[in-house]
Structure formats: C-alpha cells, structure tokens
Length: 325
Image (tube, rainbow, N blue to C red; front, side):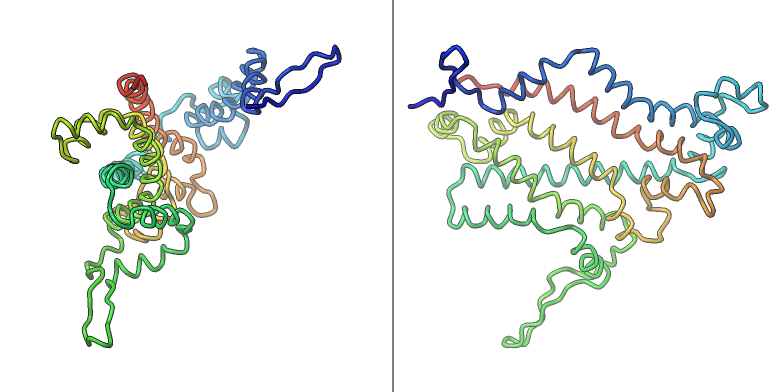
C-alpha cells in the first residue's frame, strides 16, 4: 500500500492527512472565546423574543427589547403575562393551548408508526434473504427523491374520495384506498407523515442494523432463535441509538410541519396544530402581532422537552449497544 506524501521545505516527507482529519484539527484549534462569541450572537435574537414576550404591544412598538427595564417608567407594564394568557386560553384569545395538544397528538403518533414499521422492514432487508430483496430496497430508497409537495393534492383526493382501479379486462373494480373521508381529520396527517418518513427511516435503520456483527446472528441461529426473537431480543436493544436519533428528527419534523397539516386539515380549526395557529396570531393588518413572540416560545416547549429526554436515552443507548469486535 502506498501513502501519498508531500515534501516539506526541509526535504522531509510527510504524509498527507485526510480531509476529515484536517477539518477536525482546524475546528479543535478554534479558540474557546471565539466560540462563545458565536454562541452569544446566536442567542441574542432568541433572547430579544423572550424579553418582548413579556412586554405589551405598545411597548414593543415604542422601543427595542433593551429598553424593557424602563417600560414601567414610561407607563408600560413589564413583565406582563397578558401575551401568554391571550395565546394559551381560547376563551380569552387565540387558543394555542388546544393547538399544542393537536401538535402533540400528531407528532407522537407520526413518530411511533414509522419507527415500528421501518424497524421490521430494515431488519428484513439486512438479514433475511428473500427473492427481490435488493431491487425492493432500491425502490424504497428511491422514494426519497419524490418531493412531498407533488403528492399532497393526490393524497388529499384519496382521503376524501378514496381510490378505485377499474380493470377493463376483468370488468372489475378494485378498491385501493377506501372512502373514509379523512380530509380535515388528524389521521390524514398521520398517514401522510408516515408515508413520507418511511423511506428515510428504512434507509437509516437498515444501514445501522446491517453493520451489526454477523457472529451475533449466527450464534442466535445456533441457539434456535427465530427471526422475531432475534429482532426483539437482539436487534432492538442494540439499535436504541439510531432509533432515538430518528425519533428526535421525526418528532421535530412533524411538530414543526406547516404545509402537510394545512393541506390535510384545511379549515377545520379544531384540529389545527400549533404551527398554523401561531402563524395566524398576527390577525388582519397585524393587529395582534405582539402575540407572535409569546406564541413562538409556547410552540418550542414540546421539541425542547422531547429533545432533552431522548438525548439522555440516546447516550445511554450508545453505551448499552456498544459491541466489541
């Protein structure tokens, strides 16, 4: 094996470091104080929103967030919880509280279903030898190239009117999707998110599960374990890190989704998630724009809780699922 080398000015040959290592060494050489400056610059806009969420509409319009402490001297209340009251309670204002429950019901279910199905599929593609496995896996991964925007209207039509295929030769009509009139209902959002998340989930989990040591599966087969027992007792415990990682990504995607929920639920305000309700807080002509700051922080509660909780399980899964070769 030959090693690419370059000559230094002293005539000594030095091996070229791979690009990844060079980038890593460069990042390690960045001073800590510079990183803290970046953190502060990144935090200032968020901090300004947080301060303004406790200021009245007139105070927000009159001056910047740095003048919040002088609001009381100028006749403005600070801090005030009126913005959060108007955002959360439907009998007072916008009613984001109910929308947050809708967001949670959408995000939790739309995260569990893809994980449950994709884990079985990824194990089958990785360790079960069946006919057409390679082509079926390629076709599944190829679905990642399908943009979700082009499929929303056909899916909405399918949820509203069903899908039937008439076979002229047999003079028979086959129902591909029943007419259940799911338009405007939360299950339509579940099905849509599940369909779009499945290719990526299968691809991600397959790459991890396929990299598990083959000796483990051979030992399990010698002990008489079937595929379900191997999957349940061996693969799942070792796959906790990748499952937690996908759960975080999928929850954030579904919680922050706007387009799919707006298309499938439409004008049924009782089922709208928090992203749509918060986006409409400003009202006509921006009469309630001061509520956007409080609404923005309310809508981030769910992702922050899930991220920190699953991050703990993510780290635990890495240590519990480590396998020494």
